[in-house]
Length: 478
Image 1 (cartoon, rainbow, N blue to C red):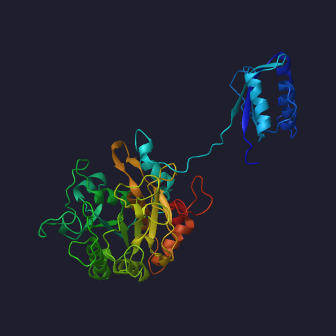
Image 2: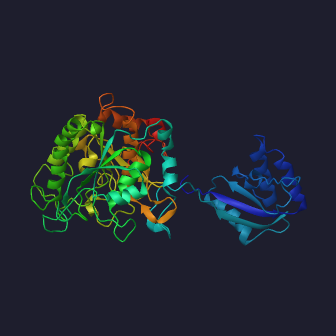
Image 3: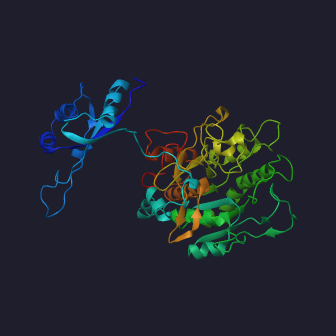
């Protein structure tokens, strides 16, 4: 019945009633235990009905201390009974025992209250806590089973990882990861590219982006490269500084638009990667592209189809899709930070929540799209959610990885957002690529294998629109 409620009852028995209960508790291992306890409860409270019991918590918790005998019931003076559903009339009778207790009952201090069922929380937002981080990178790597990569010799050796981001500071990266294989990238302006305007001639060489190592200026790309190396420490790191500090204009086909710069990068990579592989054997191995970014607001993408957000036929989406389909590179994308519970303030209202927050390149079938959970597997409420637009014929996100944690032994340095989850996953893909070539396992097949080997996380019984197939599982992947 819809109006039935769950209650619990507590009371203190007199010596005779206590003796009755101790006899009942001797039946704990018997199927008759709850029925006998319900009958005893009816007699003790003088009820005209016999309530069903979900359990007797007093009997379910037994204290045991070395060197002290028979503590099972020695200190209990209040007994707790968890009742099954009762109708409103029965509930009124029980509550009357509190407000108008009958005389001559063998118990005292009767209390009745509604019993609220509880479960593990399935969403968390950083703003809910006084401190926004949970655990450190070591816990995150443990949840991914990342240690298995090293055990199998999968260090990302001979794998080329391109960090498509805000730029890398190679000195900071090498300080944090001695021996990091930073091997170059492209020189590009710091300003413009769809972000704050600036002169087009202030090119910054690869690996030279301003970063003091902690703050106030920290380069996002340096952090993402470090996360990749945390899983695949021998990977070659390339710096493609695409992202402005913040995207002001998508502007397709205009010099000030971000999408035109992103298209130039992906068209360039299509030609650059085979050429670099041919010219230098050191880079002839597999290539993996890390995209720890997403477009938060599609309102400036224009109105002429095909549009980036919902059309696989958009030029940028086509350029991204070609790389895995042609076997040139594995492509990993962040799902985005526009989840319904605590979206990034930059997210447009039309891009927040289920079925609206994973779009564009992140929605492409052959791209590995990564959502974010805490290091205890609780979903982060800012992580973008599927499903995608039906035009993409894909199920997203593909899987999830940890985020919202601190650096090891340095709680002033944080790793947050689906960006972090994406970079850790890129490291896992790089580790796998050090064991198998794209010829033996093409990028679309590796994406599918990563999804197949993911493990379900807490409170998850099947793939869903928040966490995909579950946690990236390096132990099964490599």
